[in-house]
Image 1 (cartoon, rainbow, N blue to C red):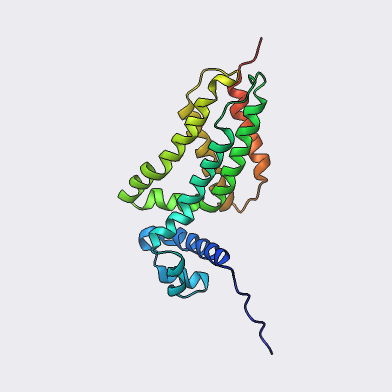
Image 2: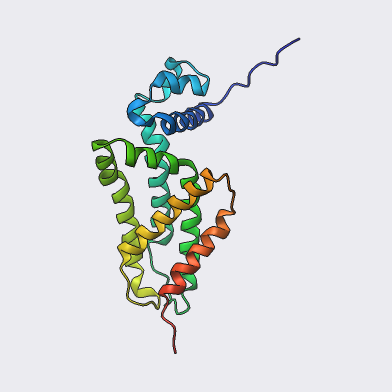
Length: 207
């Protein structure tokens, strides 16, 4: 029997394969317990090839967990940083922007939610440092976008920090819950539901 030759992956595809494998290993062992050897085995490569793409397991963790979340936040800032040109009386612009961001956040959470749990609840001092230096700055950027747009739509008075943390927490918990229950939901539809709860609760309606 002739075995078909293995398909040669591009450098970008190989890097992504290693990142996916790193997520699997990190979710089992956390950052402290993970070994590059185990990640290489999971990816089906040798350590030498792994080190051609990543200098350390910390760099791998960065690519596997921190980078996707921060990239999503940067896309939000780029897409929603400037208020709409006309006053958003019906809050439809805010609704669309919020829904699009939550859908993207849910996509990212699908990749990193279990790892966030491992990192934040299983690494003691490293957890505090990671939360303060990587999670909070991302939440702060989202809050800045919300505050920039406050004067552009009709809304009740609300705490922007609280709303941002609620949305982030809901996205994280719902993703973890669905994964543990082996449940699959349409993330766009779920994002629209979360958005409706948030925006409908905040919009100022004329009596």
